[in-house]
Length: 81
Length: 233
Image (cartoon, rainbow over all chains, first blue to last red):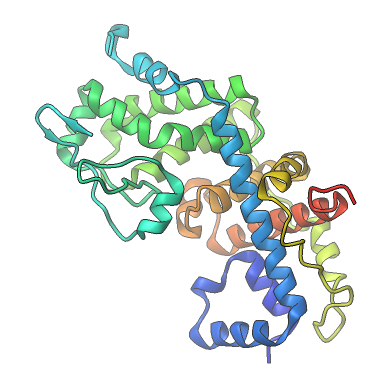
């Protein structure tokens, strides 16, 4: 029987996809029964959504010609694009 | 997008779900399908030749696919807007200068993020190492009793907490992470690179990448809990 410590560690390290089948099954069974670990998983999911939202906010800072400026710099002798 | 002498064929769709692709890029190929390069898409010889010749359309294509991702990661790693823009330009310059060593077998996203990793270390003038122990490990362990059950059960954030609000809060909390935790968090969580890809980029084992990701998430969790998950209560 997996403990809350085992399950939350696997959730947090994102190690579940690579875990053996029986371990995955154990995690799913535990999550079905344990509301505390489900709450923990929701916390981790909220962090993920927040991090992606922060990433989008960073992208919005970029000027429209961001890519053009890079390409310009990569062209030999600063040729136009 | 197409180029004069044929499609940018360069891009092979491989092993990637359309849903994941749609999350990451807004690019669409000639077929109307989204082009994705989460480190999975590879460059073929023709495209590589065009890049070596600095064909403008080929350059534009790779910058369009990867530029904003690299900028997002650099900002997430703690660089200012100007520093991040400059860093991304440097990454592409090095990519083109070293393209003869790139044989197309490696994945272009992984290659570019690898350059970003090294450039970042150069700028910080230090090889970022992670301590064997981090205080967050003790904080996490202290939440369980000897039988591995929660002592202080976690409380799920409210359903109506908006990602954008927590997104603003998380930007402050990121400052509490070590540089390597921050980088691993960005690459795994925001860019959705696999643990194996991040291993290649940062040069750590898969197990250690998991530990770094866990520490980053638990530090953010601790910090966000302190902020009421982005809302004042």
